[in-house]
Amino acid sequence: MLALLGLSGAILVHEDAWIMLPHAGDARIADTAQIATTVERLMADPAARPRSINFASDEFGLHRLSFKGDAGAYVDQAGNLVTRWSSQWERPELWLFDFHHHLFAGDTGEIVVGLAGLAGVFFAISGVFLWWRTRKTFEFRLWPKRMSRPAIVRQHRDLGILVAPLVLLVTYTGASMVFRPVSALALGPSAPAMIAKAGKAPKVDKTKLADNPDWRAIIRAAHARFPDAQLRTLGLPRQGNGLITLRMKQPDEWLPNGRTMLYFAADTGKLVEARDALAQPAVVRGYYTFYPLHAAKIGGLFYRLVMTAVGLALVVLGSLAVWSFWFRRGTVGPRIS
Image (cartoon, rainbow, N blue to C red; front, top):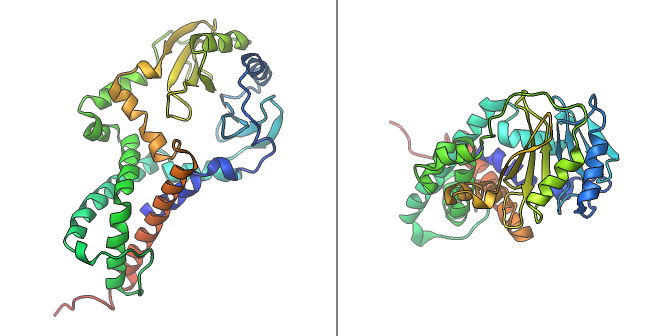
């Protein structure tokens, strides 16, 4: 499991680079008026409007639209259709993301992924203690000298100690995003409750979305409240909660989509609440660093390459460990008399 998650994660780290579509390399448009015009165009038809818009970023020049079910589309920053899909299986970046996060099994798969992360934490910590006894025999090797069980165990131990700190980082942050109470180990016992509170939408009366909300006024209000922030996502009300949600990213935020949130009334378009991610408690801000550290969304190309190496190391460590256990165990090892 860790080998498969490491491989899929290593590929996803470079997702923006291998999506080969027209206009994917376009520079991000920051002009509020142009963004508002595009939003108005995309949201003009109530019967065909997307459920959410993930706006273009500095790394990827297309807007991604989400519709009911798995349907979606990429459009350029003027709102022109680039490609459309009716199922996630039509887009490799979508099904690969679903595998890495949910194993194609929804919430159940996510729990399995979280348990694999906890197992990775245990392996990384226990591996350090096991290596310490044999530290004098350490030898750098990416591949075993021989495909025998003793050689594989030695290579596993010596390669493992090199990547253990980053494996611990990746597995712990991944497990914490699935099982929020795990975050208490690094952030303190109050962390889970504080994180949940920070992510909870304000309570308002459930109302239907207006037929033609003033999208331009909503975009202007968001930029007036946080003038230096990028628009990252726009979401329609979910389950009739009566809120249009805008997510923004300020320059000092690490999360690629930010956590600066604005909530607008679905029927009137008036601002209900604005939450500044940089004004959140330190514990919450610390938790918001977990995903960018896990997915290499900071640090540029160098950190992406480092995390790619960690993912590939998990592939080697995991696959050889499984192979040596199942296929070499009968030929090498103590005899039972």
